[in-house]
Length: 238
Image (tube, rainbow, N blue to C red):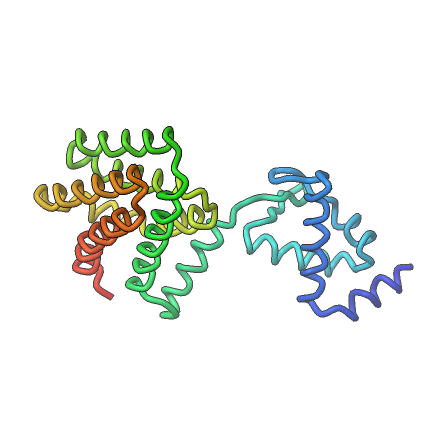
């Protein structure tokens, strides 16, 4: 039996073993046998079920850990987790380090995420969601310049949340973490007069969504990013 398992492992390329383990975990989730935060079957159990060696299972789980969907805990075993955002952040950081993409390309991606979210939000925002966005806008209007740096992020997080698209939310949070310190610093140093222009954009975004006018909201989002991206590029020009 052991020889057959080793033969099966040797005949499978590492990539194929990885996909076998992925499919197995998906089946467990589909059947309600495991969910995020819970322990996965042991390496020995997986090896017996899939007819593979424990070394092959261990390598596949290591790949899943690098992806942010598995976590090895010393003395406890392997757990199914949702750390994909952290993994994506590491990938973006590596791409920047390797010059495989630029800061300009990433801030362009942030703009595309928000205009897409605005399109979706205009079509499906509920009254309670619009009220939450209105409260975020009001807090910005009433806040000090220092507070606006934090409240601005809350407004945009709320907008993207209204889109209902979890991938947009994931990418937004990943990019926010990637640029958190630099974006916060820029927001803190935006002149009061320019903050007023940014507040006008926020108001027009809110009004566009409230009127179910996606194009008006998207136009306001683009004007907002025209202002903030100019500050970013002036400070962190590639």
